[in-house]
Image (cartoon, rainbow, N blue to C red; front, side):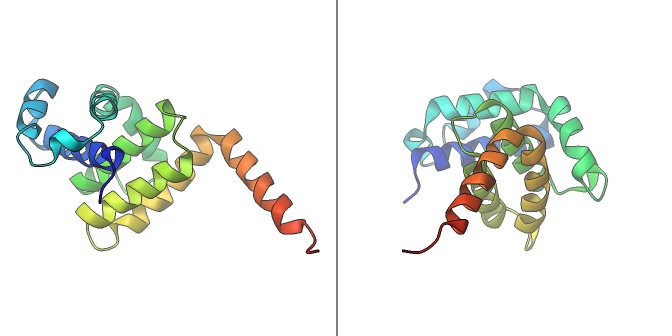
Length: 154
């Protein structure tokens, strides 16, 4: 059973993918997606924020992504580009979602919609971007992990 938030990310991914391929405006994309089964079961506010945010900031997000790629951005599959736009937007603007959750959700999307090893590529790129975008959160997580691993057993 998919959570409303997972569904919101899936529909946002589909909308970003459609935008890349068709160039349609957000209202047309939303109208198209609203007819897809399960649309009414998603977290609509999250969907709106992710879809509009990723499309609205696409050029800025692309500029953040490109230095972490091993090939030109245009050579990524449209699915990988869409997932990266979605996840980087979420990393930047939705700090209520832990970075590990954002990355895990992106990996799951890549497994479901992307190529065979696309999820590994997405994971590698997002790990680097998370360190750049949310360094404090990563340091705090590493400190917690280190302190629990160095505690002695009773």
